[in-house]
Image (tube, rainbow, N blue to C red; front, side):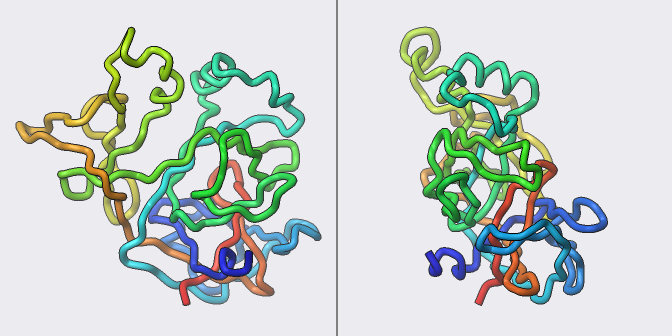
Length: 240
């Protein structure tokens, strides 16, 4: 477990950190900034702690976490695919990009790496009444166009039983263009198979993972932090 917690996880530009001044993009966090925090062992109250060290990694493999924002007392056994689809249409499905070794506090389990999260697990947040329900975890894919990533679309799961019958039996993606401050725009139509045509050029999704510069920091007293508007509870350490 310690190797997970000290392995230098991190976030690409645009990831928002919960601070005493509201949500601040990770690339704008500075030493001395106060971030919403909690003891790593899970005991204790929420508080604001100063950032004591910042670091970056120039070429990190990026993965995508897709989850639902739901009430903590929800009966998960009743959340079938149809109800999850309804939640997605209500804007309750969210995706975030992170390093594969980023750890989250999973209810009844503890710290768990992003690439080891499983469908149906509950990520704790800064609000005890809300959880992030894991839907899918996938590597963000590199494409044949520079600075454009292929994001595995949730429809691949929602429509799995239709593939080869009602729809083409292929993988569907969203093509996302990235800049220095994070994602800029979606390229072409959403939920489409590879390749797509952009200005007369065919853009293919490749097998290798998309890579970006990532940012990390240490919090005073070995505390943790919370990310995104939902406030997912994560453990974050600077790169050694």
